[in-house]
Structures are given as structure tokens and as C-alpha cells.
Image (tube, rainbow, N blue to C red; front, side, top):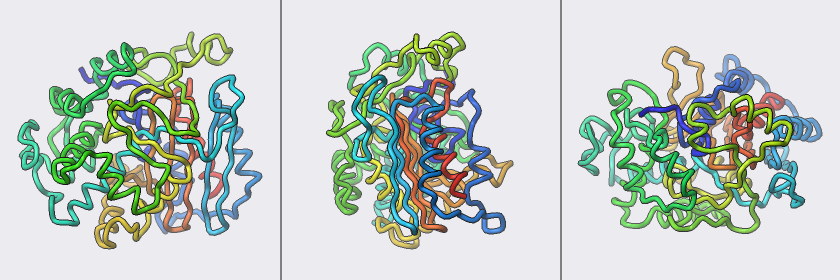
Length: 417
């Protein structure tokens, strides 16, 4: 079964707002997608790059608050860094009808932003000569069907053809039945490998969490440590990301302080579209249909593809390391190759959003988006204008199917540029 898949297991494709609701699932949205307006208003190639406007904090705050309200968000946070300094704004509360204001210091689940951690670790192993981008996957996992024809680079690029396990009825129904179930990474991989491939390796793009789970298992195999320890040793500690973590499989808690996270309906109910059906959409709008609390749902089903936890400030620091011309985690040559790896996801549209080695690019911005039940986040860095933008929201996706953080970010970028 190759269903479009649920919004609850959306852990976000990087800056690909057209995929932002697919997140961990790769689910297309039926709501109007903001990709087009982001692509036309965000910084593009030098020949057509708009000029960044002076930062008007009052105007940006108004755009932020108005868009969050339009999307029905209980709470949201934004952080902007530019040559003019750092500017933050908060909106609303940590839960629908609650009274605790959200804070820039709140911890949230960052969904598919986790993929950028996994990809960076693999590239560090490349840098150390312990793995090569053109190595066949079968070198490390002989059980992968057609693994001799799939390269490590194709896993990073979402061009392996391996089907997305989060697009299965099996996973979605299981998450509805037991949100606290502890999933083993090998279980997740087995679900993906049991599906027919989407295409021949290297011939197309399809956002598949199976790719990143497989990369996480290979990283553990090569480094001889649990993935969380690898992230701590290689990424979080060197960068001083003290509020960023990768939970153990059995750990569904969030560090304090944290925002709660809410989502609409069920995983199976939203298999075909993140947008609620008309009757439930009407109920969401008039308050007769309430969202579900996913704050403490176990995120182990997303593992290397989306189980991470962070804050707005740490995401900004990470986005700068990820998208900087010298990020500090890779040598300058490999870092530049990573930035250059971003390839248009639509081969017929060279100006479309691009995806590379677990990094995405729209205009001059490099970063990712992420979504887990109740949390949608956007992080991006523009090395041309030295601009960092992070947004998160706590009712995801919106009732109309849009990714709230990505949509708010789109509006902010349009205002900035």
C-alpha cells in the first residue's frame, strides 16, 4: 500500500514547503501550498535576488501574530538573526485554552530537522574515510533489496527509491492504537524494505524516512555507539547545544520548560490529506471539534528521521552551522560540497526547491522543516545576507492542512525580502 500518508507522522522535508506537511510521512497537502510564494519572494539566484529590507520588528511581529492567528495556533515562537542583531517574538500559550505563555526557551520536538543531524554524522564519517558517498548500501546492509545499486549519497539525497515506511497503514494504525509504543529502528526499516521500491535508484526524488533510518543504523554500526551518544559527541557538545537532545527509545518526556503539542483527528483519518474533511474543519473553526494532545506521545517511530528535541535558540545555532560556508563540523571543502549538493526536486523546474545531503535550499536559504504530532518547526540560514530564521508552532498541521511554522516563515521571508 502506498498511501499519501498521515500528518501526525509528518517530520518535515527541509524548507520544501510543498513537502512540509509530508514531513516524516512525505504526505502531500491538499491545502494551498506556500512553496510558490516562498520561491518567488525569498532570495534567489544572483541575477534575480531581491534586496533584504531593514528589519522592522514591529511589522514582522504583526505578520507573525496575524499568520499564527489565521492558522489557529495556540502558540508560536519566532527568532530572527541578521546583521542588525537578534529579534524574538512569542505568540499565545502552550496549550489550547491554557494560560501559560510560550517562551523562546521552550523545548519542542523538531521532527525532520533531526535528519540534518543524521546526515552530518554520515558526512563526518566520509571525512574520516570510514565510508564513501559512492559506496553501495549492500556494503553495510546486505539485507537491503537492490542494495548493490543504491549508494550512500542516494540515501542522503532521497533518491534511493526505497519506499517510505511512514506511508503505511500498518504504522499509522499502530500509532493510533498505542501512541506510547516503543519502536525499534530495525522494525521501522523492515516496514520500508517490505514495500515495493518507488523507482530505480537515482532516477527520481521521493522523500522517504526509510532512507534516514537506514543511515542512522549505518552510523551506529560504524561508530560503535547508540545514535544519541553519537549526536552528543559529534554535534551537540562541540557546538554547545545544551538544550538539544535525542531521547532514548523508551523516553517520551520533554525537558522543562516545554510547550505542549496538539494535532487534529487521527493518523488513519488523515492518511489521504492533512486537511480535515469539511465537517471536521467546520467543527475546528467553530470550536465544537477539539484537537488531541500529542505532547508525550513516544517519538521512537521517527528515530533518526525525526525524534529530536531542541529550542529556538539551539535550532538557530544549528542552522548556522548547517548552512554556513564554513560550518565547523565539516572541513570547508566537504561543507561546500554539501551546500552544492542541493538539487531541484522537480527536474523540469530548475528554480524549484532543492534537496541535497539531508539539507534543503530555497533561494539563498539552507535548512529544514520538521513535524511530529503537535509540533511544526522551520529553521534556515541565508549565508548571502547572514540571516537566520527559526519558527515553531504547537498545533500541527493546521486544520486546513498547512504546516504552520513553514507558512509563518514564508510570510516573514516575504516581508524581509
